[in-house]
Image (cartoon, rainbow over all chains, first blue to last red; front, side, top):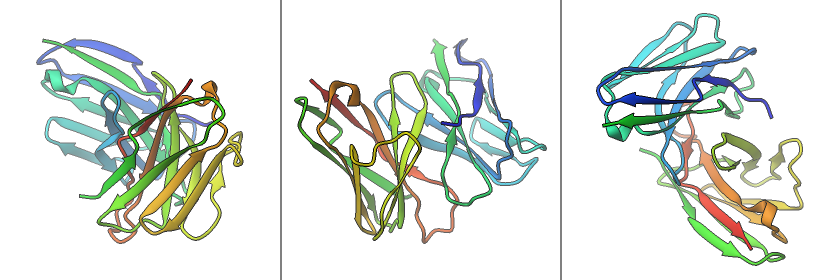
Length: 112
Length: 117
């Protein structure tokens, strides 16, 4: 099925460092979302973006909905060990069916 | 906030048997639920859209007779893996939207890990 391209695929960072990951698509999306998945669990919503250009924060997390509506990025500031996990972007297209297209995921490992 | 409960969280079965996984929306109604499959270190792939009171809509390549979906109430959808085989082993995740909230986001269950021996 169709997927969004996420980069990087994985990263190791030191505790306290900032992290940036992005998600790109060849198609336009009307809604972008960022989820985090811990091992053996379902995804948990971090940030939802509804307008092109929108910049939204949730604690140490900041995400932006690209102007072209074909991309989004997620930044994590001052990373901590519990930030470890897989981060997925997801997009919803025009149809309004809530059928998410998921990104390929970014696996984050934080070194204490 | 909205909570989606999945049961069982883990199930091991013998090849050829059928397994039912339940997805419940707690404290909210969901006319539509979604079922995903996730392989190790891979992303979530949508299998089907479960519609309350009507037939599920399956994604291309997903066998509807293999993965039976029933959405008999506004808070419960079930996925039955029929005549399971080892290649059906996977992590199955459901999601639901709180239709009364106006929010344009889905809440996911904690997933069900199926192992077919």
